[in-house]
Amino acid sequence: MALPARQEDSGLPGVPALREACRIFGADPAGARLLHQRSNAVYLLPRDHLVARLAPDTPVRRRRARTSVEVTRWLADQSEPVALAPAPGEQPVLAADAVATFWPHRPTTPVPTPADLAAPLRRLHTLPIPPFPLPRYQPLLRLFEAVDLDRRRPHPAVTDDDRAWLLDRAHTLVDTFTTTSFPLGEGLVHADAHSENLVRDHDHWLLIDWDGACLGPRELDLVTGIPDHFHEPEAERTRFLAAYGRNILDWPGWVLLRDITELHALGAYIRLAPGKSAAAAELRHRVRSLRTGDRSARWRAIP
Image 1 (cartoon, rainbow, N blue to C red):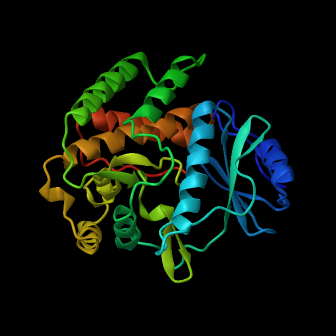
Image 2 (cartoon, one colour; image 1 turned 135 degrees about the horizontal axis):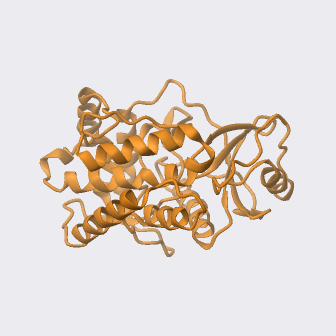
């Protein structure tokens, strides 16, 4: 298996954990290929046509993995498809200080667009609250965790000055969120809905990566229609919002969700920065653009 060892201080499990999780679950890790490392280490298992998602074995990650499995199994029983269900078997799997989940591998062809998100999100937002406990959305929780992790490193990726700014900004946004009213109301939300989290199954686009599933304002799932540092073409945003049937830009609170989403996106890069120079450079670029208010700065995702 020609895969890199666990990246130093990335906080993400590596090949030994993958092999042990596959042994417990009954999957074959031969020929496994690393797809990406951000919040999870995600591997393709070609012999079983599965995708394995691995995260550090912490109470928070256990809860998130259990939620993603439970929510997607419940969604699979609904009348219209919304989510890709997990692979059959006992999940999540705890192995070698990692928590793992296993999912069918499905194509992303043709390449999904933001407009393709609209149909599964419309269906999701009409469903009742699931009949089991769900976490409530906590804005910027993952950012606070990442900043705390980085502060305890021998050589933090974030400078003291940038850390102070990030925490002050984050607390201000959280305070504003708690006093904001959301027109679409509260329900089950994906909370990370974008075109990279779509796969094709039986002629339907389905949402994957339900780690952040929770009870929260439905507007959280419409942030792909908001202008941001990734500069999604305006025509793509317009098509998405028209297909969904609600223009979030008519609501003044959209700026709050944009700012929360952009700050949240720093968390994975703070975790990865010490072991991945590209992530460290992108982190510095993003923080600089936020601190200076440079809305023209383009952000890019690091695999």
